[in-house]
Length: 440
Image (tube, rainbow, N blue to C red):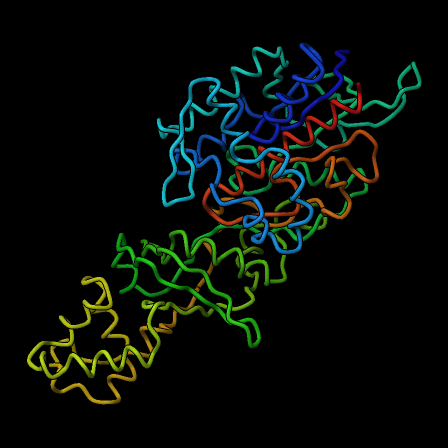
């Protein structure tokens, strides 16, 4: 039976970073990664559309505001490995980075393979053992005393046999199961008496049952505000939306989906922590299926009406279709006018007060009804191992000494823009560091 000081279960970004940091502290041949796939970092290669949006340049104290109830839990991890320290690791291996939209950080090569190559280079230099094609189930792990009366974790099945003083569970969530994320970590944590919060798909797109809208697939709605109502409170996200062949996607849509799903009371796991059937998932109810789009977030409804009134005398012969290009993408105007029952050939001189009111109201609150979520394309998992049961300073279990958690298996999810990958690296770094330091 092989012996290690630290064993990492799951070879994604969090797991690789945990192994690197633990091996830097403990030395060669002391750490291993156990990975169910035939190679490491499968999901990493998909991030940012394969370009790898590795982190976000937003200051940590501002980033924490995105995590609501988990902001205090994440604080120590994110400050332990802030963006500049993370990037330095890769820059030491001659990988350079640039910032897009003032916040999204990408490698200059815009190739996720280069990020993975650097991580694997560190693992090789530090002599971290990699065990691939080794799926680990909850029943494969036992926590007991060895012959020296020391607590150890025994990990054994028909693929592998080893023991480790400490383990880091970094198996990911349950989205993109083709990458190996099938909820294994939830069952391991549950066996160790941890609570698993409601598991939901995060960062998803919206299916919309509107053929005419979907026929505009590929059209970008720039700088719009999407909203839904929570009792009397409006919850909004501002950014770009993209019309697709199934409905709506794009940064603002995907970020709003997290807020909407968090408000929805359902889980996609059954009582055994296995994913429910497609039929059961289709029956899950959202908090609301009604959202609105504000096409002019910098203008009020009154300002729009005043603008139309002001422009009418000089544009009396202009069709409302041409005039509306002032507020909307040209290819979207016909759809918009059809939805509010105004003829596109109507001239500005013939616009009525009722028309102005309808235009202004729908520019500010254009209703969209969500048919369902595009769950197969969920980018992250919302929910996971309950954060209150984990020490935020070390990421060690409060129930089992030597058991650590990192990455998406934890109860949290951030918006798009590199935040989730940054969390994975930061929590992996902290868990690996603390697991190793506890053995010194």
